[in-house]
Amino acid sequence: MSGDPRLTALAASLPAAVPFVGPETQERRSGRGFRARLGANESVFGPSPRVREAIARAGAEAWMYGDPEMHDLTRAIAAHHGIDAAHVKVGEGIDGLLGVLVRLLVAPGDAVVTSDGAYPTFAYHVAGFGGVLHKVPYRDDREDAEALMAQAAEVGAKLVYLANPDNPMGTWLSAGEVQTAIAAVPEGCLLILDEAYADCAPDGVAPPLAPADPRVIRLRTFSKLHGLAGMRVGYAIGPAPLIAAFDRVRNHFGVGRVAQAAALAALADTAWAGEVRGRIAAARDRIGEIAAEAGLRALPSATNFVTVDCGGDGAFARAVLAEMGRQGVFLRMPFVAPQDRCVRVGCGTEADLDLFARVLPTALSAAARAA
Ligand SMILES: Cc1ncc(COP(=O)(O)O)c(C=O)c1O
Image 1 (cartoon, rainbow, N blue to C red):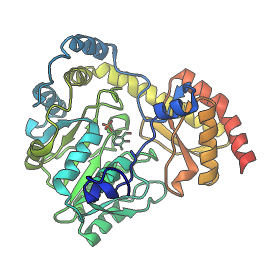
Image 2 (cartoon, rainbow, N blue to C red):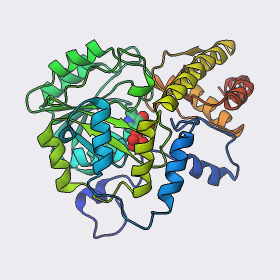
Image 3 (spheres, rainbow, N blue to C red):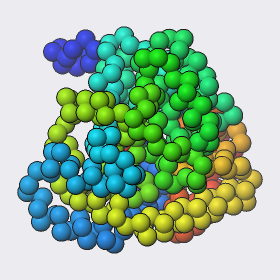
C-alpha cells in the first residue's frame, strides 16, 4: 500500500495494475513490433469500407462533442433488435458499461459472483467499488451456470456475471442453458449476461431478447464482429428503470462523435457483418487444423478466437506463449489452472495464420526444452 497519501482507503488497498498488459507495452519492453496481433480478441478484418468513410466524414466534425444522449445510435440499435429504445443504453464499450453497472449496484462489502478465470475487467470494476468477489470454477472448460446461480443464492449476491460465449475459453452455453440460468437468478440479484461475442456465434447461442425481464441485463459491443475496438462503443439491453439509472452516474460525453458515427454506419452494413462472420468461421477452422498438425487440440469456439490446449500445464503454455511472442506472434492465455494449459489464438488473416503455423512447432519445441 503505497502511493499518494490522499487516496481513499479503498483506492490505496487496490493493486496499481490494469487487468491486461497491452501489446503496445510488450512491444515497448522488447523493442520489437509484433508481426501478427492475435491476442487481444480484436477483429483483424477491420471496420467495413463504408464505416471507414463514415469515420472520415465524422473526422471533420471531431471538434464537436458527441450527442450525450446518443439519440440516433440508440434508436438504430433498438430498431435493429426490434425493441423499444428505453431498453438500450450505449456506453464506452462493454468495459465502460460494466463499470457503471457495478457502481450502480455494488456498495462496499456487497457480494458478487463470477467464474474463476472469467473476463478480468468485470472483477477489476468490482474490486474498484469495494465489492466482494465469490468465484466458481469452470466445468469442462465451460462456465458453470448452475454453480454460478447456486453460489449467488448462497452468498446473497447483488450481481452474477456470465459471458456467453465465453472469454477466455471460446466455449458457450446453449440458449436453453442460458434461459435455465436466468430462471434461477436469485431474488434481488441481477445477471450480467456479457454477449460480446454473440454476433460471432452460430444461431442457438443467444436466447431471444426479453428486455423487460428484471433479472438480466445483456451487453453487446461493436469491438468484435464490427471491428471497432479502438472506437469504444458497446450497449446494454435491459429493463427500462435500470437502463434509465445509467444516466445518474455515466460519463455523458464518453462516447465520442466519431465513435457514434462509426457504430451507426457499422450497424447499417449488414453485408460486411455477414462477410466477417464467414472469415471468422474459416479462420476458426484453419486454427483447428494448424493445432491438429502440431499435435494439439483446439477447443470448440463460438467467438473470434480459438483456445488451443497446449497439452501440458500452465508453465508449459506460458513458455509456448513467450516463445510465440519472441517470434513476433502476440497471443494471450487464460490466467487460472487448469484452463491455463491453453493459449488463445485470434482469428487472423491468412498471412497471420501462415505465420502462426510456421512458428507454432518451434515454440512447442522451445517450451519442451525448457520444461
Ligand atoms: C467477454 C468480454 N466482454 C467484454 C469485452 C470488452 O468489450 P468492449 O471492447 O466493448 O469493452 C471483451 C473483450 O475482449 C470480452 O472478451
